[in-house]
Image 1 (cartoon, rainbow, N blue to C red):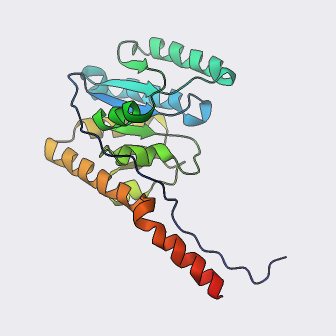
Image 2 (cartoon, rainbow, N blue to C red; image 1 turned 30 degrees about the vertical axis):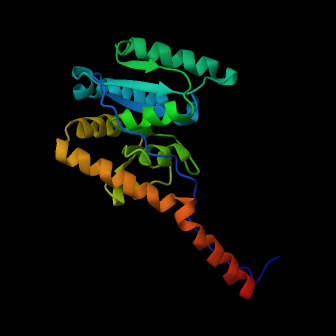
Image 3 (cartoon, rainbow, N blue to C red; image 1 turned 180 degrees about the vertical axis):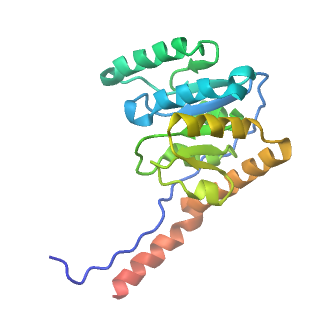
Amino acid sequence: YFPNFHVVVIPNYMELPLKVNRKVSNIPYLLYVGRIAPIKALDSLIVGLAHSKLFVESDFIFKIVGNVEEQFSSYYEELITLINNKGLSGKVFFVGSKYGYEKYQCFANAYFSFLLSNSENFGNVVIEALSQGTPVVASKGTPWETLKDNNAGFWIQNDVNTISNCIDNILSLDENDYQGYRNNAYMLSKQFDVNSNVWKWKELFESIKRK
């Protein structure tokens, strides 16, 4: 139907939130922000946490931020049961939804953020975390290989063993290496800033018009 078509792929850009000041909590935490739905593979993440000796024996907790849709209420109940069965009732917490400044402060204060979906077409929460200097662990079901390439996080399979090994790895980072990840995370977010990159869209549209 379109024998003379021309395809161009450019990154997705968004307006980055303002960077808030990080407040290191007395209780350090790992973070998930998003929908409580099966596609997000929270069950695998919870089991991975349980299999991470360093997490279980540390002062770290895991915060799950997001709303529970009625259609996935049974999945939420399964996760609660899983948390209890794995002995994580004092380590993994559902804290409800966060919005605006409160959400970005939650990202900023987190040690690492996680997005281990079985499938994800982009994942704005990754950029939101990076914009606060928080590194991210994303699954290979997401298009975030650039985290690994830029030392701004990890891009992993979302099976339980890989998840637990990755958690052990990040909790073993020394302070200098960890701060390197935070600096790289913030710099990577700039690559997706629409205000800095809108000229690329303009240049593309003008090139199409010329053709």
